[in-house]
Every structure is written in C-alpha cells, then in structure tokens.
Image (cartoon, rainbow over all chains, first blue to last red; front, side, top):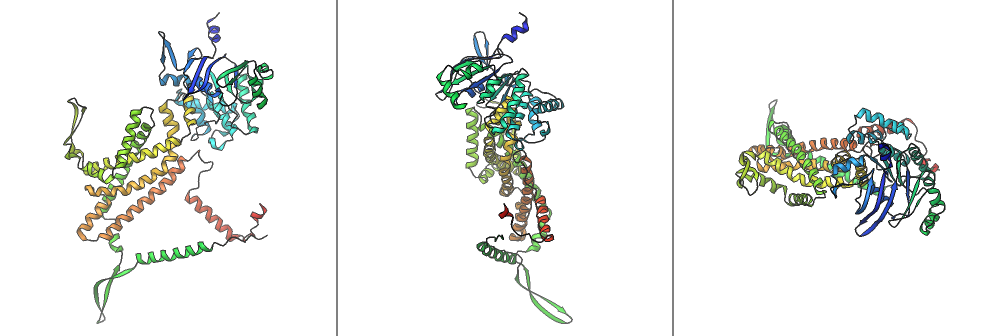
Length: 261
Length: 329
C-alpha cells in the first residue's frame, strides 16, 4: 500500500459516540458517523434531532462534551499527546476551520461588503493571498455559481438563491477539503431552491467531500452516497439513500418520510 | 371619477397659530427699546431732540464681538476640546464595550463598574475633581502596587493643566456613555455574521474588526452624532475650571463691560453654527455606513431639493392632470 492511498484510507470525518448537551438537554446521545473522501453525506431528520448540532461540532462552532470527533484523522479541538488530550489554542482552531467550508441556512453573507469582497475577504485576511490573486479566484468562483455579473452588488440587492450561491463561492474560495451545508435551501422561496441545488450537485460531481443537512429528499436520493437519519440525538438508520429512503426499516423513519415526501 | 382629497381643517388652524407665534418671536428679536437717554441735533439752526433707541437684543454688540480675537481663540479651544474628548471617549467606549462582552468575568465586571461610576457622578463634579487632583496626588508614579518599586515619577500640578484636566474629565466621562452606545451596536449585529467569520477561519479579533464593527457602526453613528453635539455644549462647563473656551471668553469680556446678554448670544450663535455643521457631517457619515443595509441609499438634501424643484416645474409646465391614478390602481 503506497503512502498516498494510506492517507486517503483515513475517512474525512469520523464521529465515535459523540455527545452534546445544552443546559441539561441532551442533543446528541452518542452519534457514530463516517464520511469518506469525495463522498456526499446527507443528514436528515425532524427539527431538533441534532443534525445541525452535529454539523456545527464538526466545524468546532460548538464543543462536543464526550466521544471522539476526527476530521482528516485529527481530533477536532484537541491534540492527543502523551496519553492526554490538550485543548487546541484559538489560533489552531481557526486554522482548522479555514480548511472546512460552511454554508448556513440564512446565508450569513457580510452585509457591509460587496459580493466580490465577500468572496475575497477570507482569502486575503486569513490565507494572506494577494488581493489581486484573490479577486481573480473570486471571479472564477462567481462565474462557476453563475453570478459573475453581480460582483459589485451588496447582498441585500440579491435574491435568496443568489445570496446562497455567493455564500457557497465564499466558502469555496478558502479551498476547503470538506464542505458543510446547514439546511442550505430551507430559507429559500420554492422556485429558488433548484438553482442552489444545481450548484451543489455540480460541486459533488467535482469530487468535493460534502456533509449536507437537508430536507430535500430528492437531492439526497440523487446525490448522496450515504444518508443518516437522526432522531432525538441518535442515528436511527443509515446507508445507501436508494435503500434507506425507499425501504426504511425503522418505524420512526417511515413516519418521518411519510410527512416530508 | 374625480377624487376629492380630505380637508385637514385642524392642521390649517394649528399652522395659523404657529405662524402668529413665530411672527411675535421675530418681532421681539428685532424690536428696539429706548435707552433712557436723549440725543439732540441742530439742523439748519433748528435744534431737535429725540430719545435714543437701540436693539433690545443689542445685535450691534453681539456682532461686534462675534469675530473678536478672544471669542475666536475660545472657539478654537472649544472645537479642540470637543474633538479630542470625543476621540478619547470613542476609543475608550469601544474598548469598554468589547471588554463588557468578553467571556472573562473580571474584564466584563471591570467594564461594568467603569460605566457605573462615570455615569453615576455628574460630569461637572468629575471636572472639578481632575482639576484639583494634585491636592491628593502631588506626584504620580507608575510601579508595582504595594511594593516600593517605581518606574516613572510625574509632578501632578504640572501634568494637570486646566486644559488637560478638562480633556481627561470629559473624555473619561464620555467613554462611559460611548461604551453603552458601542455595546448596543455590537449586540445588534446578527450572531450569524460572527459564525460566518469564524467558519472562514477568522480569529475573534479579526471578526470583530472586519465584520462586526463595520456593521455595528450603522447603529453606533447616529447616537454618536448626538454625543458629539452634546459634547460641544458640555465643553462650556470647563469654563468653571478656568479653561477659556468660547463661553469662558464671553464671560471674560462681559466681566469687563457688563454686556452679559449680548455676549451670551454671541457664544450661543457660535454653538448653533458648529452644531449645524456637525449635523450635516453626521448625515453624510450615516449615509456612508448604511451601504449594504439599504437597497437604495437615501437621497442627499441637495438631490431631494433638485427632485422637488423638478416636480414643481413639471406641475407648472403641464396642466394639472385629473386625479385618476388611485382609482385606476
């Protein structure tokens, strides 16, 4: 086995018995999950089931309380040395985060910056890319999401679908090894969902590793390699979307699917 | 069908009453009164006498001193104090607001105590305190508390000149008010903006500086404009600690010639002029920081005047159209 294939054998994300609670409420009760490189994983489940929390733990926007969470073979937020877990410094966590792209339900574009500046700011300020190089890359990415004509606009002048495509371009500008999507189409008008999903499908085809929290069952069936169904903080069912979504074995998933489909 | 607009009778009456009150005010401002003296002239051998009258508000004296060097020097000092005290206040205020929002309890409670103390005591008392501080600290030294190690010694009497005492007093007091304004601005920025900044790998400092503060400015600037205007007028208190700003200069003059009212008016007009200039500046500053928040920025007053003029001209040029728009819609 060559060194390269040994590296790629390490999953991009691995969760082992991850737990998280807020003020006494257990949100995640021991979640296990494996996301391999180049795969698209969809997390589905009713609201409050812990999907978004799991996603946020992967990016260390939330700290998990117990269990192990590894991204690219590295523990998230901790370093294992001499049989102890050392909490990472804020700076190290920032470096880790800069390699993980995140797309939010409510876009969260920087309102005071133009579309172009939204896509360049991370490159320039975090990765220290020269401004002109950053702008060139930003324009390429905006062209890829079909918004190269809007670079001088402010986010408030764009539709929801356009804003979400800019948000995807902003995340991609950091050249992430992993992309996290937190209900990227839930805040959109129905007729705008398609344009965002198309960009995501295109991204999946290019080989990006993606974890998508979604209610779009059609997207999950078409694009996902693996689907995880979360309910009340545990994974009820997982596997190939064609099997999980068409012939669910658990009653909870059956009743969930009967409501969303 | 013809649309008949509602008649606002009450509004017309209120307008008429206001017009009368304004006319009375203008009349008294420019009325003349006898001085109790008479002046006599001889023209073509005929001697005639008449009582001397003068402006009730002594406008001649008001404008005689308006550009006198004492007043102008005072004015420069007023502007200097306003700008410098606001700079201290804004820097301090933003720092305290950030401290107040820190997860570190020691930092946040220190910030809270600062605001509590400086908002809780009158600025006039604070000014007198700094002016007299050398009564309790003859020298200031920097060193390690409780150990007799010092690095720096300063003579407090030489340090706290009236101007510096005024600057410190106004600046520290302003810091307390500005911190509350800055805090409200920081809180107003959506949590999602900070999350997005973190997800790009920005540090807490970067997200504060590049993402949160620029957006907080939109909320911070209007009340800060009010603070600047308020500070301009608060500087007049420093005349009590022998700073010769514009009011101090006016007081010095009327102490000699007893023309109290005209000189107070002289000072007031200068305050009004600077306030007007500041308000105009505030409008353009707000417009700048509103970018991205509004789809179309509000028009400048000049643009609005131009629009109005265009509207009036159009009305004159074309016969008034029948008001059928509303019905058609």
